[in-house]
Length: 158
Image (tube, rainbow, N blue to C red; front, side, top):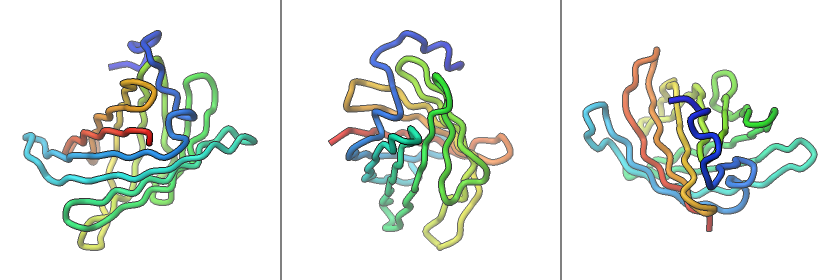
């Protein structure tokens, strides 16, 4: 799938608009065979820093086993349809592309586990705008180019 495939589709997913304000979300994580691994609820809030055209976005995942993971993103628009991002547990920078209703976001992150350890994973997330208040994300996580599992996430602006 290529980001260009979504050019002209509506509504447009504009990260610097969608990620500003309060959001809530829900996620399920499946293994490669489709078995449910875990579930999470998500609380998020973002603001736009006008001077740098950066979104300051914090999202907290609360997993069904009780552990949490809070991500503190800074998402910068570089040019039309191009984005970069930083976050405390990233290895390098996140890279994003936007066209029409889609936003493609890739990064490598040390993801904390319930036992207190972390595992370095490569994430490949596709966001699809449903309307101005909702999006669905299909993400994969893996290592060395081999996916471990899939995440299905829904966000709704409050």
